[in-house]
Length: 284
Ligand code: NAP
Image (cartoon, rainbow, N blue to C red; front, side):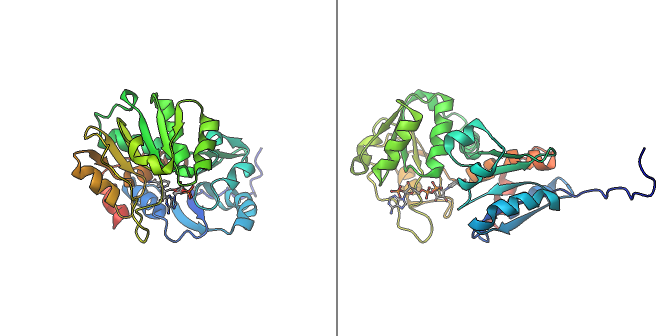
């Protein structure tokens, strides 16, 4: 029997946030804040600036302070795997997590939703895109490229061509993800695009303040779908060039929006919508 003198536990308002260092630039608080307001959910999502040496202790404390989960961004996406109790197969394969759930049993669950975000963005904005119909060409072999490779392979893409400035990183991806990956030299990128059905810039080139990706798109087929993971600016020089050659292009903002949806649903119990209203709220 409950002791009548014990005060009832106060109702908890679910909290979530994004853990990074630095984290002030993150668009995630605006994104989740928009959804919380739109669906009338009593909850909060906050930026959590956490230095690398404090990551373990912060993850230990957050559930005690009412947090139900968190997103993880640079530089913690890889380190968090070693601290999690349960790591999904896709997060293990990618070698990084971006979404954490603090489970009621006290266990820390780590997932990676970047691949989901990548696919959902293309499916929403290029509904007639059929990735299985031809090779994909990926420029870059960093953390984001790993998520894209995993997602495209799962979809059934017949071949993934990949080139990275530091070839070793692309070779490593080939060793981990297998024979459907074909590594091309950085100086041969132009040829790699020949006959590709899907072309992805997964480097940070073209971001505001950085030089554009300087590669020849002469071999690009106008039937190719071209996308950039960079979303500041929305229209990168790479996308503008591809569009001027008749290609359909999809910007990278939708990937950011879609990768956030599974976490929001798990933490706040509502599957959120990714639409123009959300895009406007995040860009504001
Ligand atoms: P990362 O792990 O640091 O990888 C950076 C990639 O860019 C590597 O392939 C790197 O090549 C390449 N690169 C950097 N400087 C270069 C240069 N001067 N010339 C040629 N290649 C260069 O970063 P990441 O996490 O993969 O992120 C990559 C980009 O995707 C970033 O702009 C990030 O903002 C964006 N992103 C977007 C989303 C989204 O939701 N839209 C999600 C994740 C990431 P090396 O290996 O040779 O250094």
